[in-house]
Amino acid sequence: MTSVDERIRKTTVLESALRRPELGSVFGLFAVVVAFMIMTGPINAGLGEKNTFGDMWVRSVGVQSWVELAAYVGILAIAAAMLMISGEFDLSIGANVALGGHTFAMLMMSPDPMPIWMCIFATFGFMMFVGFVTGMLVVSTGLPSFIVTLGFWFANRGFANYLAFRNHDTSRLDIKPMLEERNVLVDGAVVKMPDPTKIDDIFAFKNGFFGWTGQIDLPGLQPFQLFFNAELYYFIVFAVVAVYILNFTRIGNWIFAAGGDPVAARAVGVPVARVKVGLFMTSAFAAGFLGVIFTLQSGVSEPLAGDFRELHAIAAAVIGGCALTGGYGSVVGAVFGAFIFAIVSRGINFVPFIDNNLFRVILGLMLLGAAMLNQLLRNRVVKG
Image 1 (cartoon, helix red, strand yellow):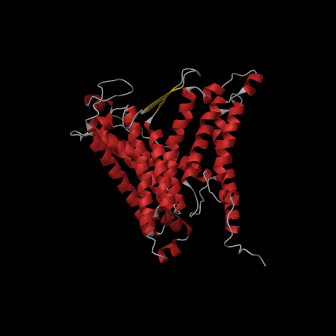
Image 2 (cartoon, one colour):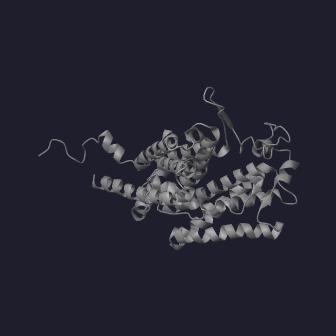
Image 3 (cartoon, helix red, strand yellow):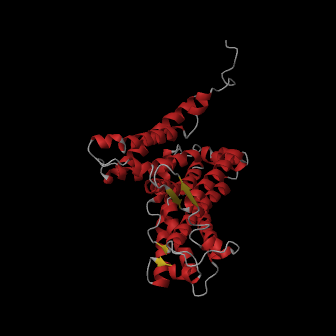
């Protein structure tokens, strides 16, 4: 006989940590950083190779290369993680980046174009409608979201290219002339200094709301100026909002319930269908958001924008601790997963004795290892 019932005994800090879905990604990020610090550091000098430690970890070009990729993949990974926690997939998220960019570009190139800010919000509205249609098909037909969104992956990318060719005889839409007519910044060339009191300028100029928004100077190291693109800051905003919703609101409880046991969730009043449709709309919005950012930053909407990013986003979410079966996962883990993906993707270019073509091999092994580790940790949680 014990004095304390096992069911109500206090959980230790270690036990609480082991129950966190993002635990594996925290250790994974630490291991990846240490590994690349070693491989790009003094070991190379001993092998007679160029020391690339500074190129990756100190110089602005190296830091920007993996931080901005982490932000790009991370925004999509956050949306993918929330969908996976609800028990669904969205394989169309990469195609929606291209669709969002093309939609915005075609609105800009219309004979009687709207103000830029209206084009932006019209694009967001259209992309959320695309997500609504996708979600409704999933919840109303009972088909696996894998199949439905795979169909939309083909349809959305093909539809974007069709509209572009039909109206402009090319799938690569160049909106630089339209931006120059509106006196905005294109490719770093100052056409006119933006007026912060004008809403069109706030949303349009490259070095503003959807462009560069910060610089970091660290004197004493070497010329170190980081001109991060806007997606990094929006990545932080997306992450904070998603963490709050998932962990501190009723909607977050509904998301976990919908993925854990949808039948039981419906029985206690959880609007499972509405939750899932809302998450598909969020996923499409995130993709369209990136599509608009990239189009404004470059002045061009590319037909292959977002190609393979749906797989990268899902990989980051899985590396971050999301279960493929739903009901278990973490936005924080997806953020760590995005950084792991980015460091491996860019870091391999700074390691002279590893062939760059091995990146996908390494990513595949990482994904398998993360999935097995997450399953092991989840089994420990289930068994108590």
